[in-house]
Image (cartoon, rainbow, N blue to C red; front, side, top):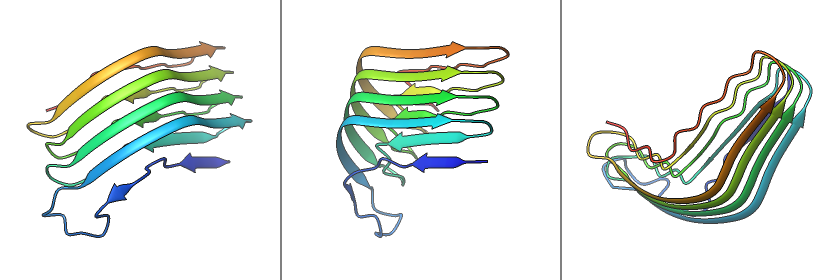
Length: 147
């Protein structure tokens, strides 16, 4: 089983600060790509992050790609993140996930934020998910923010 995990969280300030302080991140990511072939693989890309109460993230993501081929694989891509009543501001362009094979799972989220009072602002263009094969599962959310 191969596990390819790229946590693309550039410029998280106050990473080691106490959780009482809000975290902030400002991410500008262009031309990032994950590719896997084979069986039982897992890919994950988080991107904005900034965990903690009142966290804020600003993300500009352009030309981000995840590709997998084989069986029983799993992809996940999130993008804005923030957490615990956080706020996210996301500008996403040309984001894609592609899978081929059987029994694969994809997930794509984009705005994120999470927790009570969370807010997300999203501008998204050319976002796609593609799958071919049997017994696959896709999911795409986009605005997010959650409870």
